[in-house]
Image 1 (cartoon, rainbow, N blue to C red):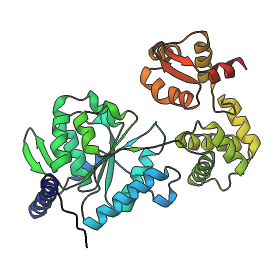
Image 2: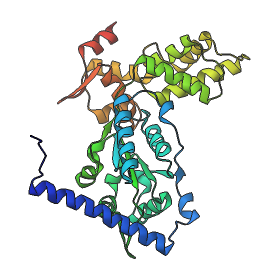
Image 3: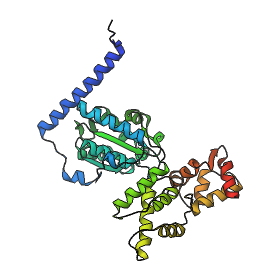
Image 4: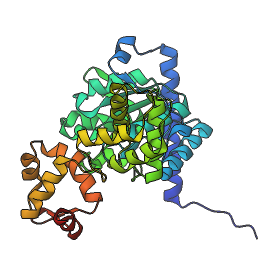
Length: 348
């Protein structure tokens, strides 16, 4: 006996609604093609072009990469745009690079901006018109939470039905993909979050992956050879952050060139780390100031930031994640405080 799945009435109606929405989007696309609407070059110049990067160059984040490649393959087979999505993770963890891989794989135009630059719905309209059916990448998308209500309400029909509502009227747009990158997904409006699907959460990197990333940045910076010993030291001291990994490679190369050398050696790296004040575990002077403060007593995050001479947001995005992930600090009702491991490190 052959068993065949039979959808419930609710499932059938949902499927029809999805297909109907897509058919309407295709009809709107045909209307746009017939009217010959093309975004002006001035609109495209308002935004930076997202550079393309192949998945073969991307290192780490295997789960996120596998999911994204599957979604891209499905989009190509169905002829539909890649669904809107959100990339979540600390600064410098590879969100922009992952979006670049998506743009390269889809072979579509892609432009990028930051959430704070989208101050009204017309800014969003200019970005969507610029990508013209490609990828609109919004970094630091959590800054949209600071925007006024019209932007949020205007985004919903744009993301869901590819309809743009502005003060001058309503019109369809070419179906596109919006990719949000954020460190704090929870700050986004719940209605927008629900239209981003299941977010891609970027996890930490292994020492081997960070060593490979150091080699990648060396090649990108035109460095002919980066000894494996140097790459491993960079991996140990980059705080698990690919962007910092690249920055450290650049700093080491500066010291090599300043000394009149051509090829980087381990001593160049150790001198660079010494001058930068970065120890073998990636801790710098700022980290140690904070750890010594917390040894005396727990402290509110805002007060910790003020003590270090930085704003609360910078502290939460740059300083806190590394120390927290290293198991040295925790948050409690008293604020930020040392763990047992943190206390032993400071006392040791």
